[in-house]
Amino acid sequence: RPGEYDVEVPDAQKLVDEQNMVDDNEINTEKSLDGGDAGGVGKGPGGFAGGGISMTYRSTLLKKWRSAPTVKEEKGKQGELGKPVKIPPEMKDLMKEKFKENQFNLLASDMISLNRSLTDVRHENCKKKLYPSKLPTTSIVIVFHNEAWSTLLRTVWSVINRSPRTLLKEIILVDDASERDYLGKKLEDYVAKLPVHTFVLRTEKRSGLIRARLLGAEHVTGEVITFLDAHCECTEGWLEPLLARIVQNRRTVVCPIIDVISDESFEYITASDSTWGGFNWKLNFRWYRVPQREMERRNNDRTAPLRTPTMAGGLFSIDKDYFYEIGSYDEGMDIWGGENLEMSFRVWMCGGVLEIAPCSRVGHVFRKSTPYTFPGGTTEIVNHNNARLVEVWLDDWKEFYYSFYPGARKAVAGDVSDRRALRERLQCKSFRWYLENIYPESLMPLDYYYLGEIRNAETETCLDTMGRKYGEKIGVSYCHGLGGNQVFAYTKRQQIMSDDLCLDASNAMGPVNMVRCHNMGGNQEWVYDAEDKTIRHTNTGNCLQRPSRSDPVTPLLRPCDYSKGQQWLMESKFKW
Ligand code: LR7
Ligand code: MN
View 1 (cartoon, rainbow, N blue to C red):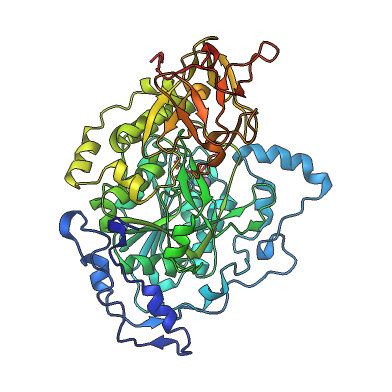
View 2 (cartoon, rainbow, N blue to C red):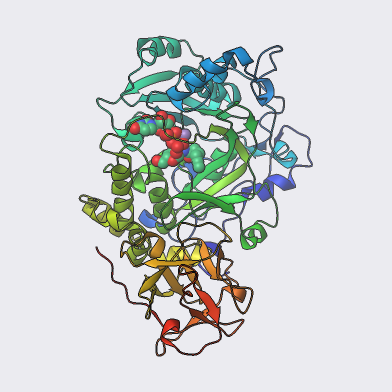
């Protein structure tokens, strides 16, 4: 594929693989990692090519870091080997009560050892891999607000137990104005006794996870910063693959595969190794299947690092100096949300690489709702963060977000001039470049003719997804001019799409359904004729027509007759 991202970044892993046959613990390879880091991908800003970590750790031996699991099963304990906790029937009421505290099964979590054993969930080939015998040190930064004791400390213990001690500089806990006693002096006393230097920092007032992480980062003395959420469990061999990628190219921001710790049973459930990060029009982070082209780029090696368009946000390693060079975080973002996509776009657009290292696996407790408050309102805060994100990074594509949420247009992004100056200073590429080179599969189409409501000339009603789901019929309703379900893009690929849904017809007489866009034409190809205003379905040759009187909410597909009921206006009339 074209694009600068095909500049060679020789893969250390390949060298490592070649050595896999050798049974020695430490192997001198003449090839080593030298020349491996041609300054990363493309000519990044600041001319740091080969500097920093990559320079220091070049030309190094490879070794197999560890083989035996470091935590043994504790017989008779619940949750060992990552198994689900079974709550006795008489405790179900207590369980429900405690669930509310953190929006996960706290009772279950409290029953599990802080040192619980886990099975080695890695791909077999991961266990054999060799990594540079010298890796940079890392500091772990964990921010939290009102986290439960057992999940927080299990995160800490899993780091201590499963990271090579020589690589662990310190563990920094940042308390973001929690209101729970046990997170005060008790926590400080506890961590003071840990075998790895661990300390607690506190924000003066509730700052949100972004500013809390910035505070933690200021105190990092290791060469790499590794961020984790406060309810994670690191598994065997999680750290080496992350650090090794940074050695390879210091502009790599690298994430583990994030496995699932059940919020109900605390069972450790492995996640797919074939998903990567994307996002939708609403700017929600979402997992999607890795496309074939990326599988091929990796020679179908499921253990090879995966270039992902976006990251989930909570779990990643980054070279400390690079973290600041690339603009750390947007301090104007509050509480939660937006920073993950902001960093993803920034890293890619400004010369870095964002990866998932599939040999690194860390569990995370996924919750169905947030347990904590959003001072100022959840929607307001998330809209504010997203407004900052789109105003700085999305260029014209910010309209996709705003068209979905016209209300968000008013969300005060505040002053983003510093962030725009950063983008300028780093000479970052455009969002178009990102879509073309990094994320052609994006739901935000690269080229489109129209974005807005689609109104029938006769009935004056508008196409409307009616909030329906995959496979259901498209509807029409009173044109409210408020975006959301009445916003469609007419793309250069001749799709009529709303977020991930495309208008689709498999029969000449309909129905017209909303089906997940496949970008392959076929039943999802429509031609809009700006002259006669028809929307003609290519495969069947029929035209989209207003609903009949008997079913006034369902548009039809009928032979084209150029009547008024087959005329559709693509002229936005939004109330913003
Ligand atoms: O005001 C706050 N102050 C905090 O310190 C709010 C939160 N926090 C802490 C919180 O205690 C936790 O340790 O910040 C951490 C992340 O908050 P979560 O666990 O409520 O977030 P999440 O797991 O629901 O959300 C994901 O998206 C967030 C967007 O802002 C962050 O990037 C999270 O780190 C991120 N989590 C992950 O990437 C784990 C995998 C989830 C997925 C997909
Ligand atoms: Mn989390």
